[in-house]
Length: 161
Image (tube, rainbow, N blue to C red; front, top):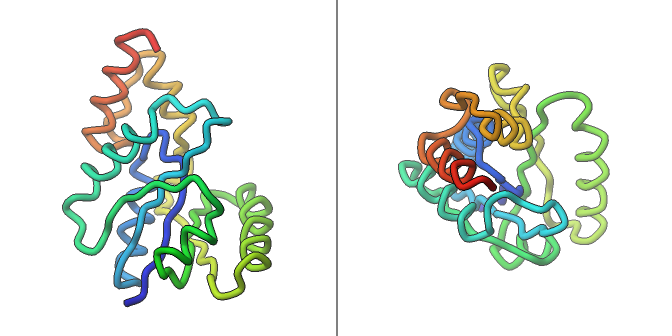
């Protein structure tokens, strides 16, 4: 079984993320959407909330599951017997950082490849940070995120977070 890991903070999951997940699922036997525990980013949603948002959004996709990790990505990938890490590239500006990560991951574990995937052009402008800002200011994020994420954002910002 060829397993790939799609890591990220997913704070929150966007339709661009879903697009990459769906296309990665066509290329592998199993996709693990790996929600990173990175408290230095001061996430809006807890790890548990992000995991639940991802799980709900991917439940219709066979051979796709969600998990979380708080260690080195390559260690998590090895633990899950993954052959590759999938990284999304929205624009050329993403490439330099992602390229550095890929090279470091290869240095840490040369058995795990990195696959770069671009989302559909209609999603290249999406970022979780922009989605949170639109939602915080009362804007409509319906076309940018799955419905369960839209509702979760509305609840978070209704509470004044």
